Amino acid sequence: MAHDETGSAELTGLRQSIDNIDAALVHLLAERFKFTQQVGRLKAATGMAASDPEREKVQIARLRALAEESHLDPAFAEKFLNFIVAEVIHHHQSIASTGAVETAVDPAGPLDTSDSIDA
Image (cartoon, rainbow, N blue to C red; front, side, top):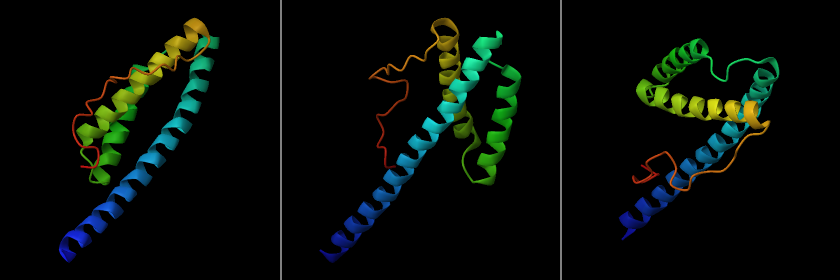
């Protein structure tokens, strides 16, 4: 029985650490989107395109290198950045056309959440 209790306590601690990191990620993404929305407003005001493919290429290369240095799968890091960039471009297009960012979220969401989130 002690083995089960020890494993359960360890699992609870690990999950708490994951929860803390998830919270930090959400806060960091919120901060990032505050800046990208400012960029979107600036682009709209100056007639710039919503996307910048050259910058996106540079950012992908930079993030892949950071991922490798951090022992994170670079392909995953690229997918993650591509997801964020797609949302940023959507925000920029929304700002350019309506002056505001649409914040409605599809409950089904674009991500596959069928796997356990604490894996």
